[in-house]
Amino acid sequence: MAEIILQLPRTTLTMDEGRIVNWLKKPGDAVAEGEPVAEMETDKAVVEVAAPITGFLRRLIVEENVDVPIAAPIAVFTETADEPLGSGGAAAQPTAEIPPAAQENQQPHASALAAKVLELSQRTADVVRASPAVRIRARKEGVDLAAIPGSGPGGRILLQDYERFVGSRSAAPAVQAPVPAAAGRVGSSRMRASIAAAMLKSWREQPQFAITRHVDMSHVAQLRATLASAAPDQKLSFIDFVIQAFARALPLHPSLNVRTDASGAAASSQTVDMGIAVAVEDGLVVPVLRGAEKLTLPQIAAGRAELTRRALDNRLGAQDLGGGTFTVSNLGPFGVDQFNAIVNPGEAAIVAVGRIRETPVALEGQVVIRPMLSMTLSVDHRLADGAAGARLLQDVAERLEGRLGWILF
Image (cartoon, rainbow, N blue to C red; front, side):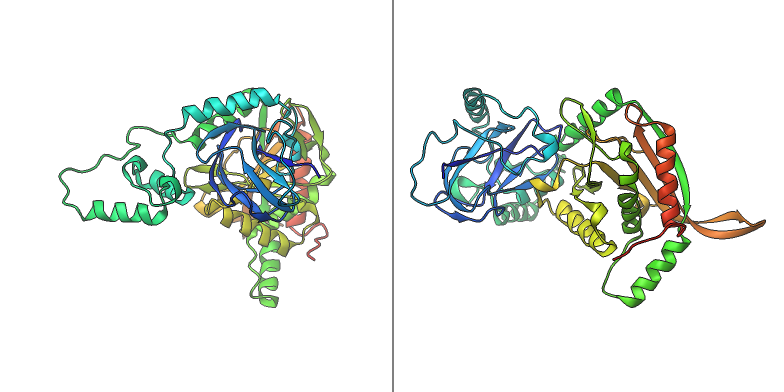
């Protein structure tokens, strides 16, 4: 088998370049297909890059902490440890890391890629080498990494180096209060810049309207209590019921379950790949729960919890990002009653979920208290009209209120 060239994967439509911040494997190491071989910093998060085959990592084309463009060759793999290597990057081919929706137009000429890699390598040669955990801590605490001596390979700053430096600094007598590194600068991180660009693109290019529906969650509350009694170890959140209701309803509303490519061409998807907005330290990431329409409620709960946990730990894989068809954004845990969300580029709609609030409502001539939930659907008006959005919300509301069949397992 010929050598396989691993390319820098695209994880979102707005991603132009990325950097390998940590090679987890070295040349000569055996790897299994899908095994993480590197950690890549993108405009959204630090994600894992997986091996394209079961075999051996033979050559690293890109060094750590060098910005390189999407689809640039970064490593060479072969099935055996001793088969001869060729040009090591001239015949790069797409690998399975790149989500289906982001593979369009990803065949740049190898010489142009090589020139771009070289240019960016020279421009970032003086970048401080540090692990992702160190970079996250430094951004959060306003610490200049250039002042920290690293004990790792090639002077790489390890977490223990960082903690030693911070500890020694705090132990020294303070002459004057330090000025936070980001004082006076709002939204200056790479992630914030990416979010700003994506949202501006969405707001400018996607004419959007929003409609709201209030849902009585009494049925879900009773169902959740019953399930908790039957399976105390199974943790089900109210948002898991909402996600499943949308996942089951969306196949019946194809104009709102859409994936668009980089050129803007849209097509209804056969699967519901549910984006789940997660607030992280530097902003927002949207990992994707794929094939959600086929998942049971416990599977949705477990998948959502796992994606959220990995997002907060900056341990998402490249396969977890990009290629979504619909997104759920939940600010209920923050006490928000109702809000509008902006449609993610590449999708047709997003639902903004508020908190469940005990609310007086009129029912059969009497005022009763019900746990009410607000759902606000934002829709790209180019792809669907108000009636289509209203029908989707009606379908979901009927499922949540127990007026349609609910399949749990």
